[in-house]
Image (cartoon, rainbow, N blue to C red):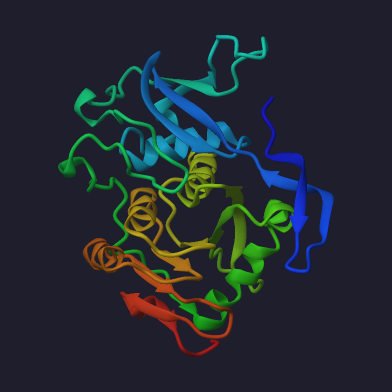
Length: 283
């Protein structure tokens, strides 16, 4: 099995001329080929771990599936890798009989890097996707204090970041009307911010939680177009990011009825679209 953390000795050099050798920990990064019905669909660079969640989230984001029942079987490929062991860098998905196979015109013709979730999309028209889970009328409203608490709660789930400093993270929270506030559903880390989001959305999908009404998706980086789209495809009404949003991400949030929060540093935040879901009071 591929590793999420790789240990390596490094040489540290200082301006004073001092040189030291020490062990270091690096975030793992490996290619993952995603196949649907045995046919190659995409290759993404990812941190090994929670691969089935990642694939389910990716297919959800691509509009191939929108319900847990759409996946009949998901498993690693039957082949053998270069090391002579089972190939854990290929995942094959069998869809339910009533689910259409992906349109070949939408197939990713080049690999998706760990920094891009839509690289390799076959056409400009395929970038924007229609969601089966509309968020426009999601009645969720939350006090700003609940949203401000999420970056620190996400950071508490970032064990690999603490060890390597080289991974992004995402976490999904739900408002279940309890006095304890938002409840954590899933959290994941990955070298790719879009992969981290796919992992948490995919985990929710595989557990039959779609659509994700009444939820908040917290991410460790910026609010990009691709992350807003992934949230919309899963029915998430609020996306919160610690860094900046892009203009296209905010535009998509406006169109989809999704609340885009950015620059959430735990003390202040900016709301860029559909601010009615965030209440200034604590009540």
